[in-house]
Every structure is written in C-alpha cells, then in structure tokens.
Length: 229
Image 1 (cartoon, rainbow, N blue to C red):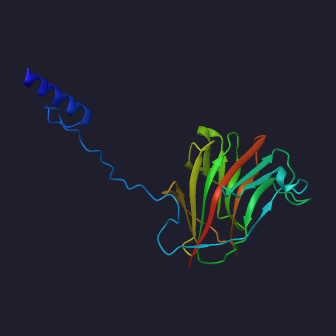
Image 2 (image 1 turned 180 degrees about the horizontal axis):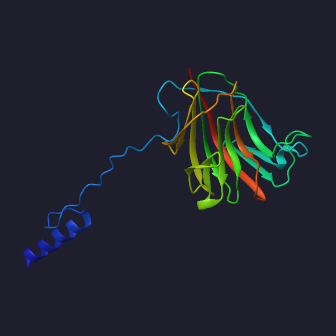
Image 3 (image 1 turned 180 degrees about the vertical axis):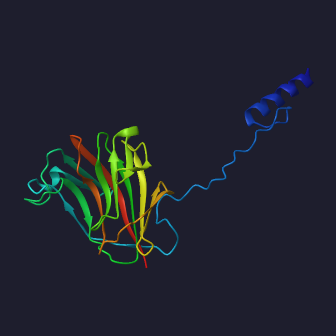
C-alpha cells in the first residue's frame, strides 16, 4: 500500500514538472539557430552615427496643417493623410497631392540611413510612403492594397506584406558611393537595389504622396537619421 502511494506521488511529480524519470521520452530542446536581430538602431555594418535633423511638412496648399497632419509628441508619432482630389503643395503646381515630412538632410556624398516604424491604414493604395528623393529619385517605397497591404519598391518589387493596420519597422540605407540601396524590415535585410543614375543631391521624405484610393493615411514614429562617412 505504501509502495503504491509512493509510485502515485512520483507519477504526479513527473507529470507536473515534465521530468522523464517515470519512463517517458525526454522532450527535445527547442532549437533556434537564427539569431533574433536587434529591432532598433542602424543596420548594415558599424560606424553609423545618429544625427539630429530639421524638417518641414508639405501639405495641400489650400488647407490648414492640422487638416492633413498631426503630431503626438508623447509617442513621437506623425500622422499623414491625403484625400483623393486634394490640391498639390504649391498653388499652380502640377504634382500629385501630398502630406509629407521633408527632411532637411540634403547630401551629395557619404552613406545615409533612414529608420522608422510604419503603420499603413487599410485602404491606402498606390501611395508613396518613403522616398530618397533626387532627380532622378533613388528609391520610392509605395503602399499597395494587395495581400493585406504591400510595400513595394517603385511599382514592381515586393518588400513586405501584409502591412495594413500593423506596425512594421523599416531601415532604408543609401550607400552613396556604392550606388546601392538596402531595405531592412523588422531588423532583417529584405532587398537591395542598384541606383542606376546618380542625382546631384538627395534627401529623405516620408508620409503620403499620391493616391488612387479615396483616402491614404499612414502613421510614422521613431524617425531616426544616421550618417556614416
């Protein structure tokens, strides 16, 4: 009777602790050989230095700023919106409507990196949400409606999906001398692109530019700018 009681207690102990002393097979340890990348901070090598930056907001010329743009200082979160049919940012201009943060980081050499968290609101379609701007543009990342929201390089190469109504972390690296663009999503390198033709200078833009949907909206927070000689 005492032996039966001891055996029962041992079985209960093994069951609650997961030990294999009662004759069961030992569980295999969970293997994860892929290191989890650090989400925040510069990517693509060492030597990057964070720089402060100035900026201004480009919005439809005939609207008050708060009608298309808001800033939540506590969360460092910018919200950009355009509505189909909005005016361009300059009266008489023939470009598409926009509500964008134009960074004053114009450069003609060196290596430059943009970092931010993106939240693309459902319905945003054929809208540029990040640009390394020059003449010609080095990269134009657009949001499309397929697959629950897809970010694409220009209009062709997929970068990540789905992106609607969720936060996605982006690092966009411009190695000026190499004429290469590298795009990281949630800390992982996803795509690289060759800049076919150099512009005299470049700068960063983010927000919403152009739309075929009734409303295009994106939230962007934790915007950082890094430089490496």
